[in-house]
Structure formats: C-alpha cells, structure tokens
Image 1 (cartoon, protein in one colour):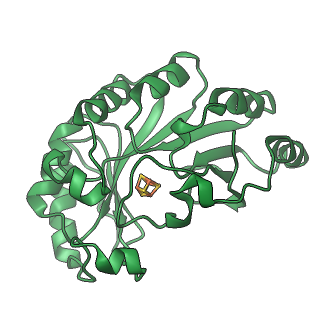
Image 2 (cartoon, helix red, strand yellow):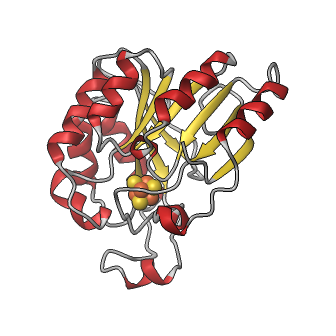
Image 3 (cartoon, rainbow, N blue to C red):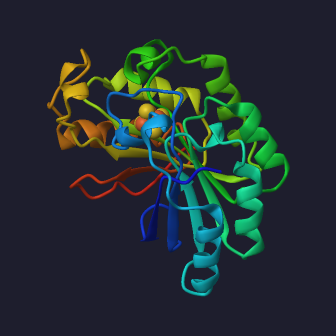
Length: 244
Ligand code: SF4
C-alpha cells in the first residue's frame, strides 16, 4: 500500500481512541472542498514512507496508541489495503477506515473479513448535487450500497457531511432520510479553502450558515438517526436525543 503521510498522534480522528493517521495517495473524486487536495493526484505525491517503516514505528508505540486510522485520498483504491490492515491488526491496534463510499465491493470485503473496527463514510451531498460537489460523476447506487453495508451494523460506523454553504436545510434532511436509523451522523465544520481550484469552482463561496441554522438542522436530524453530532463548530452540541 502506498503511504503519503503519517500523523503520529491524533485525539480527534477515532472517537474515544488515541490514533495514528495514515494517509494514502490518490482519490477517485475531485471535491472542491477537499482539504487534502495535494493527495488527490497520486502521481504527484511522493511516498517516501514504506509500510515496513510504519509497522516498525507502530511496534514502538504499542501501549501508547490505541488505533490506526487509514485516510486519504481514498484508501479503498489501494490494492494492498487488506494486507496492510492485517499487519496493523497483528500489532493489536484498532483500525478505522475513512472512505467516500464509492467502492462498496472493497468495503464489503474488508468488513466480511473482519478487518475493520470502525468506518467513517462521507456523504457529500444529496444525490442530485453529488457530481457538482465532487467534481466527477458519482454512481449513486454505489453510495447506497455502502450506506446499506454500514446500516447493517456489522461494524461501528459514522456517516458525516461537511456543511458547505451550498447545502440547504432540505439537502441535509434528504441525506438524513437516506441514512435513516443510522447509529451516528456527524455534521462537520467547513473551513473555506482559498486555493485557486476552489476559487475557480462554480460551487465556491466563503459564506457560512449561522449557528441557529445548524441547531435547527441538528434537531430535525435527531428524529432520523440515533445520534447527531456536530464537529468543529463553535456551538455547544445539542444532546443527542432521538426517536429510534
Ligand atoms: S473524496 Fe475526500 S479525499 Fe477525495 S477529493 Fe473528496 S474530499 Fe478529497
């Protein structure tokens, strides 16, 4: 598996666990909101860290770190992903996968093989806005397949959406309906990107929703999913009351 970068200690990437984060190069989407834009084009990423180096380093962190988060880019496009996870598990770390959910077959194989302890799947937009926000055509049946896999409950998971200004209240509620009954849905703060790519994207804007908008959306979502959280916002999360 190719490794673009490693963050050696994170308290925020795996809920409740101290984790290292391994970033893989390359992504099959081109989201204008991407904060890991430098990783999108695998050919332009220098991968100077090897799997063996990461594993040797993880051996020295046993007892200090709980978990390894594999993020990207889109890790499921990496052919060596299952083998890398097996090696990390052999070192007795929990493994969480961050994915855009476009490759349900890979996700299913990993889950069926018992290789994942947790999955975070981004839901970028309601179906009709996906392509514009992701900068490429996205097979919505693949997204639905990945959603169904996670909803089946065979692995801990969270769905998450970055709350960009282009998403309306109705958009977010449509997503909530799509993942109805989910264990956890996280609304993430969007930090406007000032890159040339973002500024030139027709979707780009630096506007943001006011806190009252977010609170209202969160309360409505709490009727659709078991827990609805916010992440990164300057408001107190609403306790996760819910109807299910
Ligand atoms: S799916 Fe994630 S890594 Fe890929 S372009 Fe979109 S935000 Fe970036």
